[in-house]
Length: 192
Image (cartoon, rainbow, N blue to C red):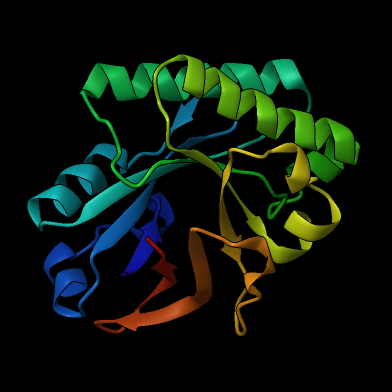
């Protein structure tokens, strides 16, 4: 399946234009950092569902330790419960440092980052969600996060250009410039 991922950074989304380009799903940012909800989260959820798209959600992590990752997972659970959302295409822990937050606040070591991923997944599994995974760039997935320690985790691989199937990713983010109606979105492929 072809799809997109969105956040408040995309502004208001014309969901019919997304459907018209044969997209079948959207992964929507629930929030980020220290329990901040994405301003467009519910608009994006409602718009995508009304357009007939399948959805998943992701949370951009600012965690620097295992306890903070657990708090982020608990926040995701609370928001999903409050709004009655059970995302068909999973809950994704966005583990990267695209905005330099971790670098500027004490980048955790690789094992701590892997442990944070494990904690996020386990916390949500214990809350009843069976479809939880990790989003990261190919570089992070192969050089920083020890995916072998996350045996039950689904992988969403951000690797623009060529896909390396060695990770057996469930979702591949292949570009940040998928043109839909003159606007750029992150383009993804979902493998069932």
